Each structure stands twice: as C-alpha cells, then as structure tokens.
Image 1 (cartoon, rainbow, N blue to C red):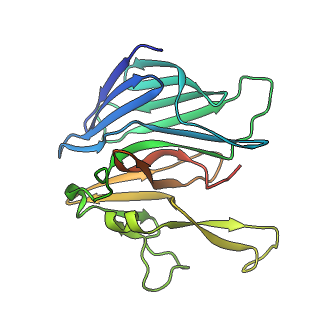
Image 2: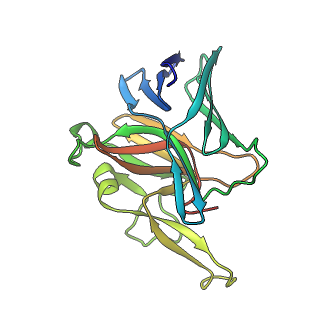
Image 3: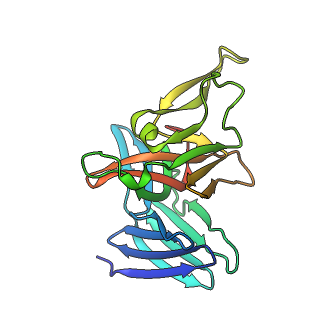
Length: 244
C-alpha cells in the first residue's frame, strides 16, 4: 500500500487541497470570495474496457506519484493498463483553474476503451437521496445554447438540482443511414453534454468548459451514486456513453 500524499495550491479565485491514499485522490476545491466548497469528494476516474466475457471497470489508480511545481500539481499513475498524467493548474493572479489529462499506452498490446470519464465531484444529497438545502437555488445552464434550435418551445437547458436528480439527459447518436432524419437521433443518458456549463449560485457563476485543439469534445455534468449521497461530477473529461 502506498503512503498518503498531500498537495495544495491556490490563486486569486480558488484554493485546492489534495490527499491521495490507496489509489483514491480526494480533492477539496474552495471558491475564495464566497467560501463555497465547489468539490468535496474523491476525484472520479473511471475507465471501462470490454472483455470477451464482459466488461472491466477501473476506478482506482495505482503507482500514484504527485508533484507540485510552481502553480501546477501533476498526478502520474496507472489505470486499466494505461499511463495517466493529470495536470491541475491554478495560474497566479488570475481567476481560473485548468486541467490537462493525458492517457497513453506504453505496452505492446492495443487496448480498447468503451468509456472513459473523470472529474471533480460535489455531494448534492444525503445518504438516502434527499437534496441538501444548500443547493435549493443552484442552477446549471448550458453554454452557448440555453435553448437549441431543435429544442421544443417549452424546453430550456437550464436545470435546478431537483431536475438533475429526477430526470435523465440525452446524447446524440448517428448511424450509417446517412442524411437526416433517419441517420440521426437521441438516446437517454445520465450525462448532460454542452460546450460549457454555467453553474449559477446566487450572484456568482462558475464556468465549466472542455476544449480540445484536435477534436470536438463536450463539457459533461452527470450524477454518480455513492453510499454517502449523490454526487455531481463536472470538469475533467468524458467520452459519450459507450463510445469506443
């Protein structure tokens, strides 16, 4: 068993504390102006690989190493036979946090991933699913399309926590049939996809975005069930459901 590793960073907007123990990276992220605890749970890493007789899901890291240089914490570890490098940067003097996540295969055998996701987590309910009062007025608004051209007139991508806890999202799917409408549709998913999300909380708003220079990716918010309560997962990176 590896020893416990700790690290911390802060800038003008955020303070981050990290504790790594037994393959789990627990992160507390606080917004300094309001004192709000944005993340309070183990950072989620989940890699799902298809096997001939089923599926293997890896949710713990191994061979974890953590280093801090200037404004950046770097996590290096192994997961599902892959090398993971995760950099979290809090640039000095500015008000944002940046993540850079790299997966690489240093083996001789090709690996297929049916799903990969990672992200910060924030507990939204108690252990029996009752919403915490602190989130009664929080809202999550899709950016830039609060209302997409394809949305029904009465639907906006603007959700309170009660809605997230009760309803699923949808993700687009495309098959080989070609042009619309036959080759394109939507399937239900616990994830919600957008170029970005505005987490609105009173007079404050946290922007959550995903950017990739070489591919189209989405910023994802989703809910994870845990014995201690339902957790919001945000930031990080995520493939679409069952996307190889």
